[in-house]
Length: 136
Image (cartoon, rainbow, N blue to C red):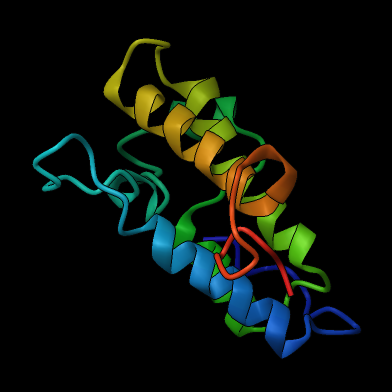
């Protein structure tokens, strides 16, 4: 996990932090297919084991996982919602760098990357102002 970041000088406002937390919570509930049993985010919750996949940490310069985003929010390491959203994007971009294009992980990363973009860019989606797709 990325817990080495210093706390930001001006922590993220509570309303923005809550919006990011809500986004992460909603994304972690997205399931695959019609049966809805496999959660797409499960593989992205924690960083890979360094001993099991040392080449991952050579290929990926800025490793991130969903738990590190949650930890960074809790510790006040983000000074803007955009920084947190960028880390979410980095999680899925890293997966696409490391994993083969047609793999299940790459497919899940691509789908979650698109959904993250929709959540963070209301103009990309047709949504109401009541949804999570708008930021406070």
